[in-house]
Amino acid sequence: MATDAKQPWIRPLPERLINKIAAGEVIERPAAVVKELVENALDAEADRVDIYIEKSGSKLIKIVDNGCGIGREQIEIAFSRHATSKIYNFNDLESLASYGFRGEALPSIASVARVRMVSRPRDTDVATEIIYEGGVLQSKQPTAGPPGTTVEVENLFFNTPARRKFLKSEMTESRHISRLVTALAIGRYDIAFSYSLNNRKIFSLPAGGNLKERVSALLSPGKEFVAILGETEEVKIDGVIGLPEIAQSNRLGQYIFINGRFIYSPSLSHAFMAGYGELLPRGNYPVGALLLTVRPDEIDVNVHPSKTEIKLSREREIYNAVHRLVKDSIRRDNIIPSYQPNGAPAEKKGGDISFEPRGRYPHPKQPGVIPGPMAYTGVNKDFLKELYNPSGLKNSSLESNIVRVDKTTGEIIEEYVPGGSSPAAPPAPVPPGHTPFKAEEIVAAESDGIQLVGRFSDLYLVCKTGRSLFIVDQHAAHERVLYEETCRQVENQAVVAQHLLFPAQVELSPEQLALFEEYEALLNDSGFSAAPFGGKMINIEAMPSVLAKKSPENIIRHILDDLASLKKAGQDIKKAMAQSIACRAAIMAGDRLTDEEATGLVKQLMLCENRYTCPHGRPTFIKMSREDLDRQFGR
Image 1 (cartoon, rainbow, N blue to C red):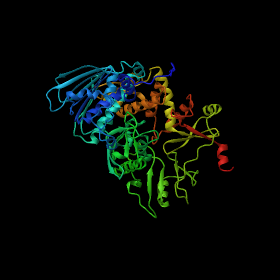
Image 2 (tube, helix red, strand yellow; image 1 turned 30 degrees about the vertical axis):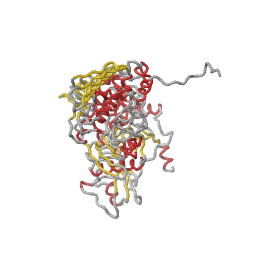
Image 3 (cartoon, rainbow, N blue to C red; image 1 turned 90 degrees about the vertical axis):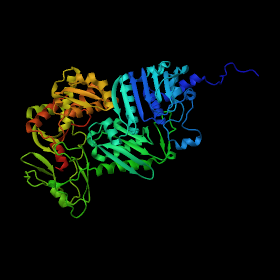
Image 4 (tube, one colour; image 1 turned 30 degrees about the horizontal axis):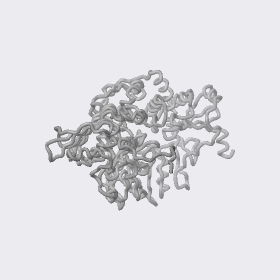
């Protein structure tokens, strides 16, 4: 029977091609090489791991450990596909206690790079050197070397130009490596780690410390963290979490581990954040590390070759445990204060009072007090009357059951509503059509003048012009003014800098340091004068004048976090810089302006190109006309 000449022929692929295909799954970028080699070192029971990176790993990745080593007769087998010492049969997948188990990493790396390994078991006097290039064995010979294993990976992806072409910039790849190395060092805080990038020592951490010390040293040196520990039927949790004041604008400060393995889990990350409740401003994320221990037969790590994605058979129960433990730990450490009128404990009359403050932490003028609305349960009306009608206030002719105005300060104050079970609710959003400010009204504002009527909660300015009432968010308004001015200055490289009386040395996390190196030129074009100072330190000699009164340490960390988040969201990097500076420099809730300052701010806002929203898209003011008020009151 004749065969069709066009019939495709099925045949096995060559071993080298198989390894290249496998490398495409296992080795996505240089950080994946670092992960696989360090995890091999940890599986080899090393108690010290040294990591050296050059040119984001494309030139050199070198991992040195003092683990058990590999014997001469085994070292070549280690580079065979699916050769491993970590599992022996199918049942071992149900009780994995090692990081690796597939036996794919070494042959995959060797197929797309030049790899040199020197290894010596602890019970021998001679090490073995083996070299692979593009998956082909080049040499194998005895050599001198200390106990343990050294692996050098050079010229990564030299024979797969398509993969090399799609690598990100050197700074971006270095950031991925720095985040991964930070995670590995946190997950195994019991062993010594060192990390050098481009011949610069980023960190060197000794063995024998505790999780809190390791997390603090890596994520936010000098800041306070809260240790948490708890156990349920489904999971044991050991963790360290940061106070709300060091929250970041992205999730890069969160590190979650299951059975020692660094994993990505949107569900558990959400549980981590949800435990903070309303303590975190919208768009901010907590910093810290959670180490979860789960029964091996309750998880499946054989989902993806990278082994960073896992499946949990009892994910809902574990989610609840993480959320509850984070929430309880925060309250136990008194991060959430209780309201104490006149410094004395709140007295309970006729029922319990339960507070859950919401908003930013801490209050800028009252440390330890969180501003914002409160949710009440079992509220005592006498207590509310005392809280919302403080003594010493003089009532104006505007006195009613809803609003009081202090004639001395012009402050508009919420008042207790008789017969109600809670304070008056905030005004409903203004219906469409009540805003924005129309062009002809700007002309009227300039001719009639803007008159400050009062203030509300040291955040909202109440102004009137003509027949309209305007409620201005002072932070959003100032942010818009500063943003547009800073945009112009950054674009023209004309930002006014203020030299510090004493230069400030700031220690960054490895990932923040990578961000600084990526954005150093932009920072220095935007009013900063900052440069590397050795290790993870940078030296700041000047800052934009609008930030002169701010802490250099806090500002530089927040701006780096903002730049990473805003760039990821697709925003122009110069505008992202202007937005971050404006946000950090703007007056905050609780900052009281004089009448002249308040009026001047509103006038500046009206001259802005986009006066209606802040750079984040929130409204800067709402407008209510006399006709709107008449309709509300049924006139």
